Length: 216
Image (tube, rainbow, N blue to C red; front, side, top):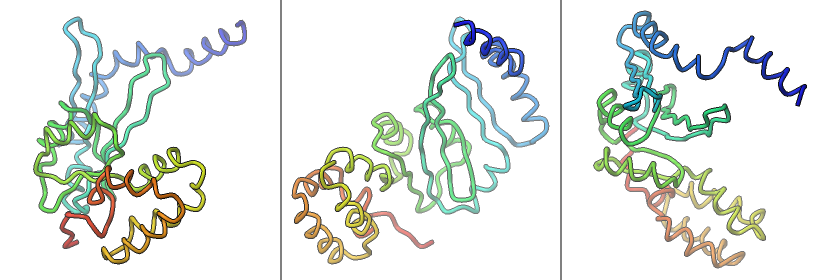
């Protein structure tokens, strides 16, 4: 305990305390907007002035979105500091966006708008699905095949080494005929995988069944 307390004191001397860092957010956001004109920041607090969440979109990212493929990939990471929480990121190829959740999703839509042939990609997190459906009802929501593979791997552990290459061949198949060929091969290894993937929705993760138009 003495060693742990010494470490905590040293970390506080170097980095400051988390509570003090939250107090600096308004100043930090002000300077971001001053030094990066066009940058959008939002800081939401509760009625008793406690931190709820923050949103940041740098102007370079806002302008860069115009030149990226119209694919927004959403993911989150759990924070391990004293106050826990989650940091959500929306990224595009060659660009980064900001923090997501239902209200912040609306801010992102106001910041970046909706582009032709746009789609959103995430894992199967229910909160992300619900927020996407509410804010972007017109935009297809696809599932990241790498996250889906992790679900398959955990659900069907016994045969996951044999299933891996076939699963990614399924996801990347260009034609339905090729998709069905790989699905037959998968069923030979473990027939339980097919109904599992069917329930997820082929159109959400398979190139062959995708309903997303891709002129790019």
